[in-house]
Image (cartoon, rainbow, N blue to C red; front, side, top):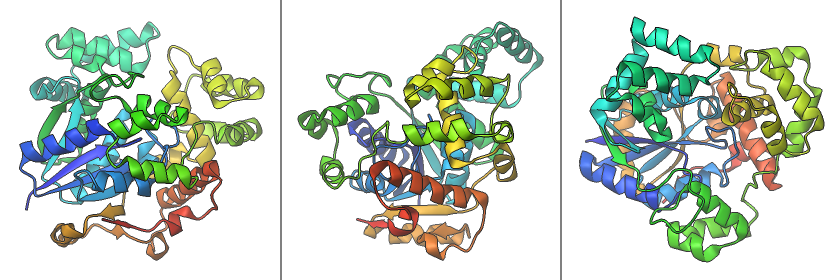
Length: 390
């Protein structure tokens, strides 16, 4: 049995994702495809538009055989730790191969960048420090330094999916995860906001949902009926739904709360705290607080960590997931679970039955409650959503 793993967000699932799953299965010759998917919040710190269950249902209808959650403690992180959490789960679930999208499917170049970042030599370290001293944010400094020491590969890091691909390869090195790798070229611009492309971006499709452009949605989203049903039943999370909750949280935090936040340095908490006192929306807050060194996405993650009460100490104490939360599966995938169970890694089906008391699990339940709050739904969604069966 050959198992292919994919790490994704599917916010929302669209034609480009379906293309990726088809190509990945074809190239890898996999018998089963398992997806590790961000649960309620994305890597940029934003709440997902659809619930984990609805997004899992869309993936299962379009090529996935099983979908597991990437919990908030890894989903809402920088690319390095996002990848580390995802690859760790795939390894623990017994994946033989991994596939990801990339702007350039140059596996040898991506692998060279990954090796350099995991085992940096003196030339790269000196170049990185020199670029950071000019005030460049860390990702840009890494790209500039890599271009100096590996001219044939460094430019790869100028693209977001290539950067994430390198992080997956780094995680495999760090975790000694022996998986075959299948990069799939992206078919469209990651940031494009128009639906005119053959494979519109998730950004463009979220905009279409907010505009009520159902013709554009149904053309570009497979299983669009799942999204439409969620919208009709009040299960779509609006991007501004938690703005006031966030501003209240930031305005009432004590200095010790700020100091405990993950990935904090250079007094950025002072800027964020000041911006929270005058901003009326999350967007205003982030635009007012961002700096060259502290970009929008990093601040957005800080805000979500503040809402969830996540601390650096918590993340340090639990560096890797200790169980896999099953979101959904296809009925025909029963042999897959027989193989997974042989690995002995804990699988969470019903949250109420899980006996572990790890901090990440408590955070995950809270993330469900926050997501539900933004939809006007009752608390306890993590206990009530159930496992999707297709």
